[in-house]
Structures are given as structure tokens and as C-alpha cells.
Length: 296
Image (tube, rainbow, N blue to C red):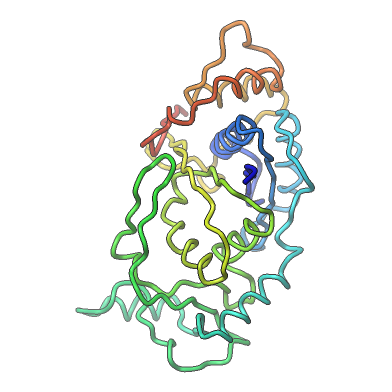
């Protein structure tokens, strides 16, 4: 099967060093395998999105010579596809409507001897799904799986037996559902993304099985963390990539990934740096690494 990888940012702000690290790792891994590298904009959370951020992210990728194959896929254009999948899962008895608020769930699970995670309050009520969240039924603990970098992953007990949300109460698809459907739609075979998403895989594999979709291979690369140990993100005020000096940004990303180019390439165009890096890329350098610290 031909290699298809992807980079799937959410437009909650501009491209920063942490998201660039993931983009570069997934790009290099795809190109070294002579595969396709796709870009998908995961714009299904309007309250968190920043106007113009999607275009800004794409411009930054272009400035850094991170060229993608095929047209960019925008999840907001596929809401009908996700809604149809939810209907099918409910009709098959694999999912159910739930009207529990987060505060209700917290109160129920705080009781002595209560089941860990969602307590199953609405499972057998047969509520209409029109004005409710929709959850997948999980009747057994998550299966373990083998990550390409982090090795065997066993979900903690707190996450191993919980009916998870696939459609929010406002009607928008949850992350798990949209990601699983779009990875299959685009034929993604290999997912290289941040370590912080490792815990999402068991639910996504469960959903892939329920929908009859293939399981892609996963590689969870380390995330960048600041001086306090907090993940570098748009929410923690990570600065935007400086597209006026793309060479410096590309060189720094490669250094953090353990693929430092030779001194004579310092200042070279990003395309030249990627050409060198593809030849010398070894994702095994990142095996077992969860985080990479950076300065202020």
C-alpha cells in the first residue's frame, strides 16, 4: 500500500514552533517513503477558531517550502458526511443520545464506588438524538496497540471503559469522529503527530472498527515544552513562526528533531534543507521521547 501521510492543524492561531515540529516530522517521513503528504484544516470548533488563521497556516507552510499533495481538505465542508455516520451508528445500536452535562457527570463520578469515567446514565434511555450529544458504546476496556515510536500503549483505567462523545450537543462532530472518517476518506496510511494525542488512539481505533475502516499506523513524536514544562501551544502564547526568516525556522526544527544539517547549509533555503533532511531522516532518533524542552 502506498504511503499517505498528513498534517492536520486546527485554525486556532498561527503556525508556531510546536506545530511546525510535527509538520516537519510528518513531511520528512512521508517524503522519505516516497509517499504523499496531505494538509487538512480541522475547522470544526468555531468558538476556538481565529478568523484568518487557516490561510495564515497555509502561507507559513508555503514560505517554508513544505509543499503538500492534493487539495487542502476543510472539515467544515464535510459536516453532512459526519452527520450521516452518526445516524448509521445510532441506527445500529452502536451509539446513543446523551443529555448529561459535564457538571452532572462530574457529580456522578465523584460518588464513592462510582464507575470511572462516564457512568452510562443515558445508555438505555432511547433519547432522541436531535438535541443531545451522541456517545459511542464502549463495552470493554480499550485494546492495547503498538505505536511506531512510543511502543506498546495500554490506556489507563480511567480512559479504558468510557462511552465517548462523537457528536457534540451543538450538532458539530467531535474530534475523534471527524479525524477517523477523514483519514479513511483520504487513504491515510501513516499518522505522524504529537505525543499529546497518543491517548486518543484507543478511542479512534474503536471507532475505526465500528465503521469498518482500516487502522493506520501511528508515530507519536515528542512535543515542545517551555521552561515550566508546559506544552508549547497557541493557548500558552507560543509565538508565530517568522516567515520572514524561513531558513532559520526550518534549521531550528531540524535541530530539535535530531537531524542537524551541516554548517554549510545554515542559511540555505528550506527546500535545500528538506532535501538534505529527507536523505538523512531517521525517526528512530525520537523513539521513546515524549517532550523536547526549549528556552523562552
